[in-house]
Length: 314
Ligand code: GDP
Ligand code: MG
Image 1: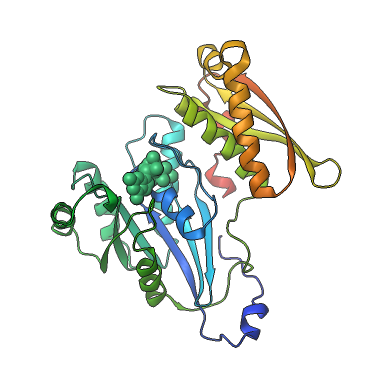
Image 2: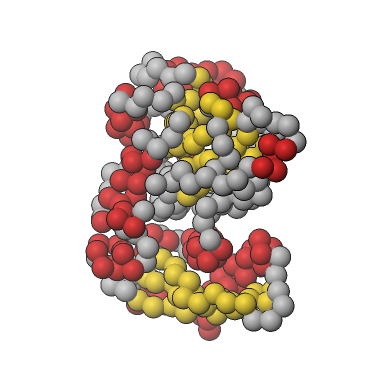
């Protein structure tokens, strides 16, 4: 159940009684820029981003509120062929969110013409009853002619309500995207207070930021084998916070890489993460980072549950 409702007196009192609101599910293959798009629209870091596929593991809400109303974006893990239990969970989360939106953005990478991986997504989209926008991202990387070719490679296979080319990275055409999105939504309440931009608590965002830095600084199999859990998150004096977090890996060798020579890598991850967390919280943070090996946690039901990957808890 995601539709909890909050009071919206503040905006109503300004005389805006024709507010619109709704949920937009963003789906697409890994690495097409779903999380970048949500962050760009919301204007804050809701979801971590990396150039490695399958960075997003949970469904996250990014909340955009303007004088027109409120759009709750559901950022999802990419739809891909799963190779372990965690992957199955991620694909499950993505396909479920198809049923939760009032509108769907089917996000594709403009540098990649229609391919077999897209067919599976399109098959799923045939059954949905809500409108679908084909949002063609990364248009900063190609010229108009190439873009037209890519767009027709998609529209040949699939009927959608609108095609909107954007660059999430450069914020190109996002105003049109938002304008057309509001046009599709109905009058409705604000689901969250005006100043909220995510449904996730700061402890979750902190864990994700630590994971992002680990992903950005490591290569090969390490990024996929990492999970981060915040174990302690408490205020220690005025505007000072203590956060204890554990980075889990699957093998001793990966643990070694993350610790690095003389602990340099772990130190760097901690420093970068702490700075980002401090910026978001507007407070001083002491970040206490630990690292543990949990063999094959991605295929272990009990470990997955303990690390927060459970469909029952949703
Ligand atoms: P997701 O897996 O679909 O959530 O993709 P991410 O948001 O994590 O982005 C994957 C990669 O694509 C990152 O390296 C982003 O910086 C990059 N990216 C996202 N949007 C754009 C864009 O509009 N232009 C370019 N050039 N790169 C982008
Ligand atoms: Mg993502």
